[in-house]
Image (cartoon, rainbow, N blue to C red):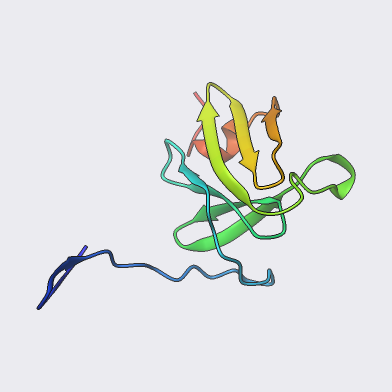
Length: 105
């Protein structure tokens, strides 16, 4: 939040995409470690750490997670549920545990 002469305003941060194209982000989920998983315009997920895009997550054989942007991401007990603008709800059983915690227990 930023204080301005007209009141409180949301203060956005510009993430660094590295070699990835810049993308608008609709859906995101903050993980317990503070890392963030977000969708992108071309249908895959991006893993963010400290404002830097670290990994692009796709389906097997480099297929996109969705045909179009990901609108919502839910992370619950090792399952990642994504809802895309293409109308599909996809549930991934691939564990993001190594990505979601700073150290294994």
